[in-house]
Length: 75
Image (cartoon, rainbow, N blue to C red; front, top):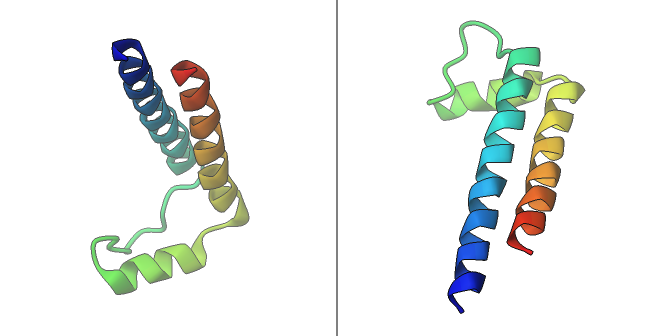
């Protein structure tokens, strides 16, 4: 039982780390345009509307890799 719980916790931690690292890399490749305040809802809406397709693909890649890596570690 303890091994199962620790495995799930390690998988969750791996998932979070992979997602953060890949999305940070995406932010380096596709920085947000200057003058947009992401803490405001209208600023976030403009940011998402102006995102290139590569930046959106990085988000999908981050979550896909994170889910795979987290599941692999948990198993």
